[in-house]
Image (tube, rainbow, N blue to C red; front, side):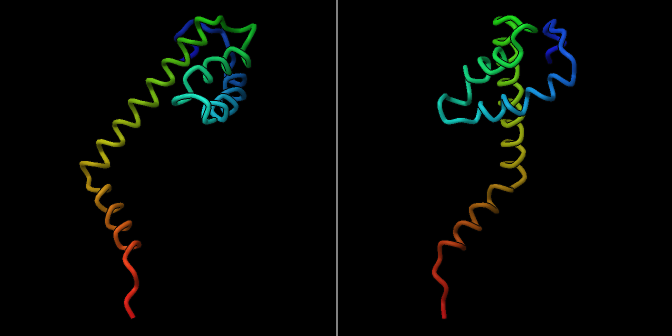
Length: 98
């Protein structure tokens, strides 16, 4: 993704930065990590990317995660996996009979 946006960053830097950006993006201080992800990318990769590239990379990252999650949700709903979850919840909420 970074290389497609014209960034010249080594794979080692990407693999070192992404876990920290993921951790910071999961903090409950913004909706889905919007803004935090881009700021983290800019902070960790300053000197390598511009603010526009950080925003573009964060937006593409958000889009990729959202689309893949939506596809997974549709597959889970169509395969009946969600019904199993509801049955497990119903079974666990019923009191045991002696």
